[in-house]
Amino acid sequence: MNTIIKQIEKGKPFFEKISRNIYLGAIRDGFLTAMPAILFSSIFIMIAALPEVFGFALPKDVSTWLWKVYGYSMGIVGVLVAATTARCLAVSMNRKMESGKSINEVSVMLAAIAGFFMLSVNQIEGGLASDFMGTKGLLASFVAAFLTVNIYKFCVKRDLTIKMPKEVPGTISQMFRDVIPFSLAVFGAVLIDVAFRTIFNESFASTVITALQPLFTAADGYLGIAIIWGAMALFWFVGVHGPSIVEPAIAAIIYSNVEANLKLFQNGEHAAKVLTVGLGNFVGTMGGTGATLVVPFLFLLFARSKQLKAVGKASFIPVMFAVNEPLLFAAPIILNPYFFVPFLVAPIINVWIFKFFVDVLSMNSFMYVLPWATPAPIGLILGTGVSLLAVLLAVILIVVDAIIYLPFIKAYDAELLEQESAKLETVDGEILETDNDMVPVEVALTEDTAQKVGDGKRVLVLCAGAGTSAMLANALEEGAKETGAKITAQAGAYGSHYDIMKDFDLIVLAPQVNSYLEDIQKDSEKLGVKVVATKGAEYIKLTRDPKGAIDFVLSVI
Image 1 (cartoon, one colour):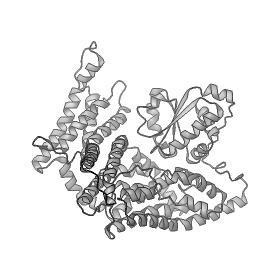
Image 2: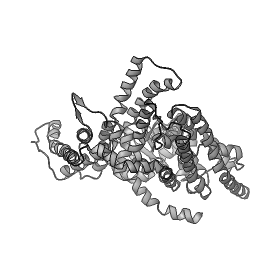
Image 3: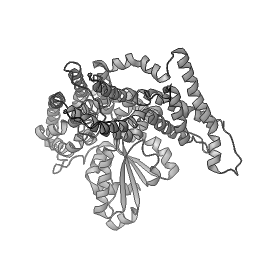
Image 4: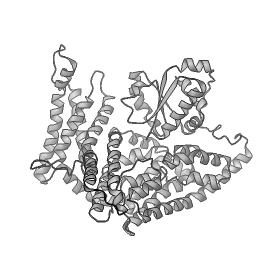
């Protein structure tokens, strides 16, 4: 097993390179930016639809209003994502541009929206058809964004702009500089639209959806969903944030299938499309990647070693809300031969069981988008429309995952017991003090020194989804109160930091995003902001030690 894991670990640099691809990153960050609109619309759709599940009917006017809110938010998510993806890609492109040359991030958003309409929307009498403005048009959103930003990059690098005299105010001058790239970007989308309508007699968005339908159908099968969530777990096992690689590739289909399921349900049909965003959040990654919801509880109930007992106690609450990094790095599960099999197998078995319930027992698949941090059993039940089958499925998944993990936990626990008996490095149940990944913080600051050094300093902690980063940010806030250090901390998700990083003195990268260190340093150096990456055990240690977290931050500052 160790040999297999070592061979897999050799591919880590390649996996990290994929995760840092600017196009995948733009899709990921574009969705992250647009997520408030998606979640906002889902609240209204659940208010409108769930009463019907229990046999209640809302007044027609109220129901119509609720559906209107949904239609004017989720119904235009394709438009929103075209803009946000273009902006995020432009930000990444600008990091590599020559000094004095940059892509106008606001202008590319406007051009991408116009390009998206060219690629997706049909004219009808009295207005525009909205069929592909929502999730069905997401593939066109990405194409419009990528086309737009690359044309802007081409024009900016070659100075294909209208240059105004230096006496002209900057805002007016910038407007003229953007005329040529804006025109070329939109006209490029027009040419694609003309070509597709001439050859296929349909819009680009419609043609692509039709052409890729066999692929989407295959991805919705047992093999497809096994590959998707097995790969996600495999990447995470070697320390690369798996969702960052896999989810951008399936983003269009997992969101459009949710909308398709909702329409099927409204028409009295079976919501049968399995491959959805909810399948990942609440089934395949139940409790986090690797389907680890049951693991902390198994540690508490069955482990005899002090280390696993302590990890279970510290991680069961975060894992309930899909923040499983404290578990992954403290147990550890990452690159631990004992957990290789269950970490990959549990997600696959989960999605297979879910598909069986949908295909064979006719349970509805996910029809609503809920926040990813919703506890998995609740998200599963609500997201599929609340049914007895969903409740039964949640129970079965918990039992099955426990059966899968328990033998491997017992084997690992037995080894830890031997180590704890042979060595006295663990004192009073405190773990991770002698962990090889731990980077000791050799700083002992007095309260006066802490106040002086940390006066007015602001720290931004970044992780993949703002869950793990909140743990360290909270520890820093608590440590500041204990020591009197004038430090404030804020948690954020990598990708949403571009506009706010200038307001901070230090940025701390959580382990799952430390592969982005080189990228963020290019931005931070221009702003005079310091950046530090953390390792797994080190990060978990800091989240549990507020005073140590303050010492760590001050030592870097």
